[in-house]
Length: 47
Image (tube, rainbow, N blue to C red; front, top):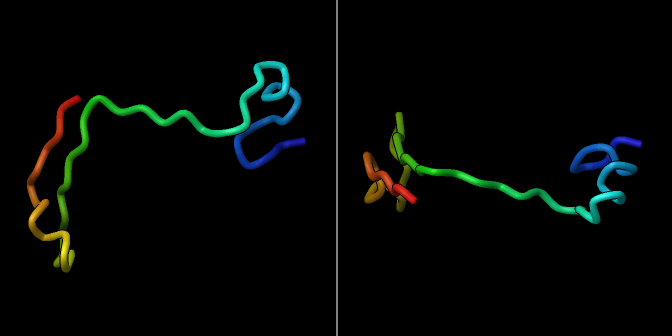
């Protein structure tokens, strides 16, 4: 059965039940007004 995070049978084999999200960089590139987050416009975080 396909669950929220992939195939449940495979997830049980690897004891994984959540997503592991990874990024090497975050870029805040708003195209419109973003309200209280405007201070992040054009801000980049490199990890």
